[in-house]
Length: 310
Image: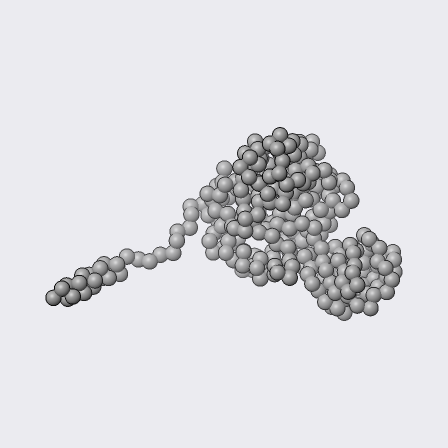
C-alpha cells in the first residue's frame, strides 16, 4: 500500500511538471548580433590593405593607434589616419609607447592614457575609446581609463552582452596560425549571432606567408613583389630558406606563381600558402554578409550605442 501511494504521488508530480513549458535561455533586452574589427598598433597595412577591403565591402573598422609610432616606418601617418576617419573608421587610443599598463604606477598609467588621447586630438582626430596593450589591465588601469575614455577593450575570448563592463570589453584574435584557423573565427561569429551578442575581432599587421622553392638571388626589404601569372602584388618583409613573408597589397597569389622582386631581381616559385590575412579578412566579411545579412559590422562607438552600453 505504501509503495502504491508513493507511485501515485510520483505520477502526479510528473504530470504537473509536464505542463511547464521548456524554453531556451532568454536573450537579454538590447542584445543585437554585432561584429567589430579592430587593427591594433596602427600599422600602415590598415591603410594600404584593410582600407580597400572594407571600402569595397561597404563596411568600416577601427584602428587602435600607438601614438609614439605614428609617422614612423611601417606605421600610419597623420594624413593616412585622417583618410581612414573620413571613410568612417574609428580611431582608438592605444597608449603612447605600448607598455604593459598593469606593470606601471598609477601616475605612469595616467601619463600614457592622457598623452595618447591628447596627441590624437591634437592631430584633429577625435578619440573616445581605447585598447589595452597586450590586453593587460587591472582595477587601477580600468579606473584611470574611465577618466579619459568611454570604453576600453581587452582579450577575454567572449562575446559582449548589454550588461558588459565598458572598460572590460572582451575580444578574440582573428589572426590565423597553425593553431587558429578560419573555422575558429567563423565559430566566434556564429556564437555571437545565435546569442545576439557583440563579437570584437582584432589583429595586427596584415601579412601573408607562403612556401617557396627554386629561390634565385636575395630579396630586398620593402621592395615590391609581383606574382605571375596571377598578377598579385605584394611588399617583401623577409624570407627564410623555404618560406617568405610579405604584405599582400592586391590580388590573390596562386600556387605555381613565380614571385619576382622589382628592385633586386630575385625570384622564387610559390608552392603553398601558409596564410594570407588579406584573403582571410575578405572571407570573414563575406561570411557575415552571406550567412547573417542582418548582423551589423560596426565601430566600437557604434556598438556601444546599439547595445545600450553607457
